[in-house]
Length: 604
Image 1 (cartoon, rainbow, N blue to C red):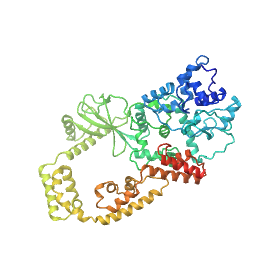
Image 2 (tube, rainbow, N blue to C red):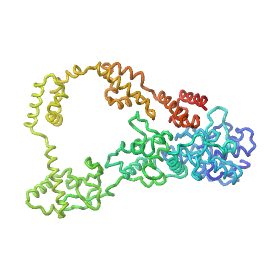
Image 3 (cartoon, one colour):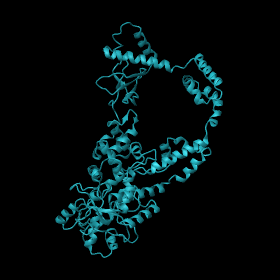
Image 4 (cartoon, helix red, strand yellow):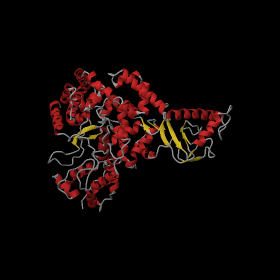
């Protein structure tokens, strides 16, 4: 049992409590403090997620009332790590905090390199308690401002993680390592302050509250919010619009500052994956950014874990005017689709009576948009009406505007049905003869040229007689390679690729040089990505082999770009500032880590 143990101050990290214990204990070696607290002489102190709290509580339970759950939720970053995580990872993380064991956390979030502090909080704590401490809120990744004083947080001189052998210990906050007259060397640009303040407050909410989110339902929640904000129409989502609006809302500078910028050389972006995948976990700050963009708060996300129901809950009314259950709710489900003409969401309803239709979401006025299908009984009823001189009602429907709407959409239904009917043998033979005559009159023409001469014939045969068309156009393609001057095309494409590389290298935000990025820039993606053209265009493909960047090469270029940006803006040059600006994670590549250290030594 311990002789004493300090009480935790409001919003104090447990790491800070342990550091204050070490200072008061009189222990010369931190290993003696490890032994006092955890019955171990060798361990690594962790700022965000401590270990072996079960052992510690057993040592102080005799003289101090301890609520382990309160300790974990109020004085560690457990909630920040776990709120958007899988259930099994939450349980494993909690087990590590209480019982120790596995050194690798199931949820990986990289802490900032140095502890942060607010100068006003330091003044107030020192006046009130006679000492200062490490605030939990100030260490949350994504928090750049003190929520109490609205001041930018400063970096102390104390590292959050010990990475060098032999340098393990607890360092308490002091006026020496948290000077209150410190002038920030890494001021946030004025245009980012308001947005980063909002983001900081949301990140605090993630760390302070149990959001009660089920991991499997998170994509479902976002899909509901996307539908509410008009980014989903029916069963389709407009990701390009979402991405463009998201970038315009936050700006490239802020996204790059937060290290969540999009990699344009990849087709799949994190913003799309986070709304679709129920298997992938994402950094909490990405959830915060998306939630704020969708005009909501992380605290209310749990309210939206439900299906998109623009037409309400079923059953739904059947709008077959000839059925004796007209407008009665007898349809159990609806399929959401998008109207290609108006770009609005519509519902597809299928009734057991044999009437299938779509309608818009207008509960005040039930009106059929399109008849998709109906059985012969209802079709005959409509046809009988069309033979009448004056139509006053349709079945059970008597309202004039609704009657006129039914007549209009039934005419469209009949026209569409006629177009979908399989053409007769006589019609097919007519178009076959047209195509054969084209071949005879133009024996050396390619398929593309024949198509241009008679596009109607080509489209008809392609749609209704594709196998015959394939067998009767193959011999016209033997001239294609003869018509193409591959040597000339190789030279032209080489020049285009060289120019595209120059443009990509000169962009404000670095883009990795890949076949995809070069292909999109030259509008020749189909040629650049296909190996079958290598022998025909050797100069271009040899040049591509020379200039394409590996991931590590691209990251090195980003580091150089980040260094230049920091120097130009007069910001502090440190491993953290370079890593954040370059969007690279320390420890992933020894080459990149060495390069960053070299720059820090050279410019700091």
